[in-house]
Length: 110
Length: 323
Image 1 (cartoon, rainbow over the protein chains, first blue to last red):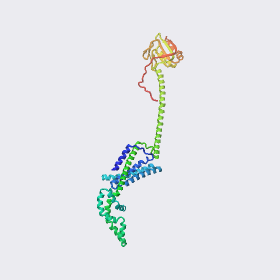
Image 2: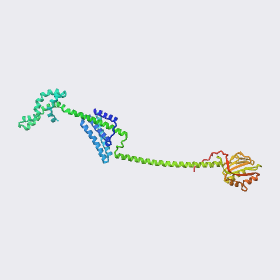
Image 3: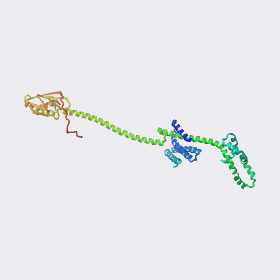
Image 4: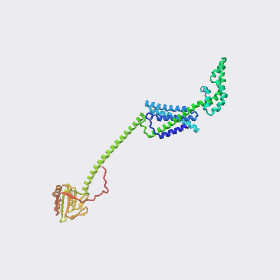
């Protein structure tokens, strides 16, 4: 619940504060957001499965973000940044969909 | 964990129980501590396990007692442990609770960060100024697209410029054509008698005192003048056009339905000497007039004004044909 509250607070803060994203971060921000979304969906699913562990969540969140950003960074260095970021988005999207399906089964029992 | 809690169990319950432990502890601990814990645990746990085991293990049953003791000792110990664990759990939970609140704060912070980053990214995407931060591949693609579009637009520009040049030249030529048409219209107007004309020419007066001059003489005069290059004629008050006709008879000559009265004045624009010579050729107009008893007076002039106009006729049937 507090996580949801924090999410809402973050959104509101983001709406009212208009920070300039530093250039070095800009290419990785969307991927990092997707990775964090994946972690959040995984955490939500774990919570509904009653196996939620905050430590696991924090570590998976940070690791997801870092790994996704690193993969994109590596892709940029290798000259396949666009393709690799697409791959990351696809994989994370599949995971998000899987988690969303599990959450849906929990909530709607269907 | 149990191994780590066991040494901490006996020491800690006494201090927190007296100092600051929650309500659950003082109720359960004072009841359990005086009865079971001081009796069994200090004897069995701290330094008593190694001490009691050698004491009860007189090296006679090394194998069986060691197997029997863990089986016999856990029977009191689980009870004591289970009593001590709930009592001692608040103590490890204290740092645990702090850790869990810390982790909760961390989770909340991460979630807030996610929302923040989400909104920022959405705003960046919506603002559309992510060109500066796009990666080189994308920039190259964008550049390619822009160059292709530029090529297309350049082609369009050249095509439009061609069209513009064509239209301009055709406009200029149409202007020329208009001027040419104007000149033609003026020439034709002079020829058909719809515009006034002035220029050098001759003016002649044919007197017919005996009324014996037929219309043919006037027609011959006009034809001679035309042959000599005259360009505009006026007989009396009537302009000669392409469809002019002399009718009537001698003494009552009509030109285009208008009655002419002697003396007949004919004005013609052209080269004056040529026109005068054409009228004076032997067997020409002058001789004919004289044979009819009339006189003809021709005067050359540098400025003959022909100001009578004819009503232009619009063709009923004839239409201009292309080509």
